[in-house]
Image 1 (cartoon, rainbow, N blue to C red):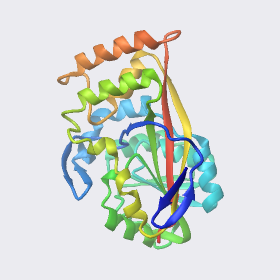
Image 2: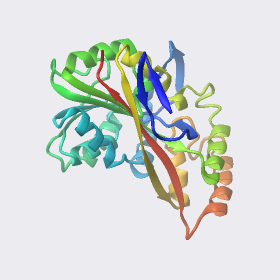
Image 3: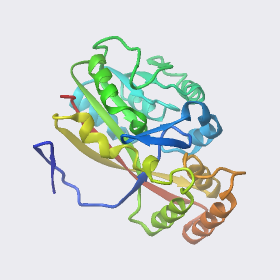
Image 4: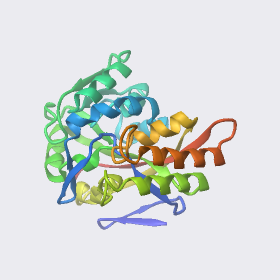
Length: 288
């Protein structure tokens, strides 16, 4: 298959596959969607889900960092919307120096704890649109599960300011892979119970419809990698409850949702676990 992006033809070698919506790395209930940008009070309401993020959210394949190192070189990286540090850890392990940009205090502290043993990591209380970083100070900017919270035009200008000449940008998502019967059944349950937290699907769409707008006239590539987690039933519940648009324990709908997930788990478990599958998608290029 050939993928045409703003007049530039790129090759995409893999067959067409089905994806579920991606989950956000930030959390909170949507208040408005304006000009395609999801707005929320997530910078203060995330604290109720930090533990589930740390325990049950997937990391990222090492192949992501290897790809971006080949394409854009090894150096200083800004991880924007760095959250609990899952994406930053992959880049640190690959030899990058990482500055995490994260406005949510609880998430930032969780990331600091996770990455405490990495001397080349630091975090800043800042936003995508105003990172506080110096001009031309980083060679690569990455954002995992966070792009839909950003204002496209303002973020683009800010990232152009802090990028070194020739630097790259990568927008990254772990997307649930729903070509297996198990994952299709899980997805049906999450769709059913997302009505309150994400009634129009804006969070689950995660801003991927604005990627071309963000890159503008510049070409970008899309690469993808398999990813998975093994869960017992507690892990499955924790993973689902880490999604900002789904009910948590004690909230309306949670017990019913947990019951439906329990039936799915018993149907598909082997030796007490199931495999929760993703495809990690990386949209990357240089800003025009």
